Length: 356
Image (cartoon, rainbow, N blue to C red; front, side, top):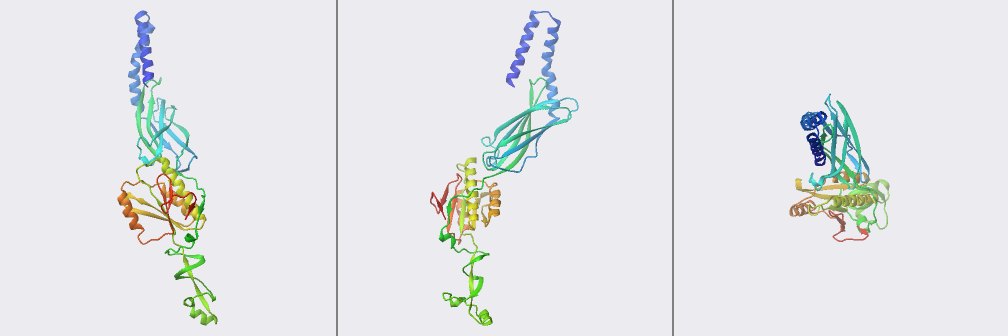
C-alpha cells in the first residue's frame, strides 16, 4: 500500500508542477480530481466495509498427510451499486500452538473482483506436511478503491479445523514368547486357545495322561462314563502398554507428527499380530491418565482420531503421580514409551529392532 500511495503522490506532484508551468484548464481539472480522489476513496471504502464479507466454505473435517486439501473461500458483496476489489489472507498452522504467531503461517493470498450484489468463490489446494489438528483461518480482508490505490482492512474470525491422519504402515517388530504367553487379568477370554485361568473354562474334552486330577469334570464324567476334564481359559488382557509422553518442553508440530506416526504404525502392527495392548497418556486438564484398549485395526484407527486432540502437559510431578496411580497393581509384559519427538523405548531402552 505504501508503494501505491507513493506513486499517487508522485503523480499529484507532477500534475502540480505542470499546473504551475502551463495555464491549461485541463490541468486544473485533473489536479482537482486528483486532490479529491482520497475523499471519494474514503467514503467508498467506509461504505463497502459494511457490505462485504468473506467466509470459509465447505472445508473438509478430515484429510491425510500430504493429501490435497481443497480450501474454498466465498466473498459476498451486498451492495447493489458498487463492485469491489478485494484480497483475503489464508493462514494455516498446527492447533498445538493455539493460534500463536509461530504456529500460524500465511499460506495463500487470494484476490479478485466481486460484482455488486454478488458472490465470488475461490479455492486453494493446500498440502499439509504434518499430521494432527490443523487450523485454517481467515483473519484479514482488504477492500480496495476504484484504482487500487487505497485500501481498508477488515478483521475476520473465520476458522476451520482439519484432522490430518498419519500413514498407517506396518513396522519391523518381534513379539517374544514371553508376551505371547503372558497372562493378564481381563473380562474377556480367548475363543481360540486355552490358558491357565481357573475362573474361566475354555472347553471340556477327554482326559489325557498329563492332565491334572483337579481339572476333572466329575459330573460330566459320571454322565459320559469316561474321564472328562475342563480346559482353563486364556484371558484376553492388555499385555503391552504403549505410553505416549508429550511434555510441553521442546514441543513442535514435527515432533507431534512423528509421535503420531510411530503410535499409529505400532498399534496397527500389534493389532495385525493379534496382540491386545493398551495406549495411554496423561491428560493434564482433567488430571488423569487416558487409557485406550486396542484389539483390532478398527480400534487403532479410533485411537489415532482420539490422539489428534492430545494436548501437551506442563506439570511433570502431577504426570508421574497420575501414572503410578493409574497402573497400580497392573502388570505388562513390556512397556513401550513414545516421546514427543517420536523416539521409541522398550522397557526404558532404545532398540534397533523392536522386541516386546
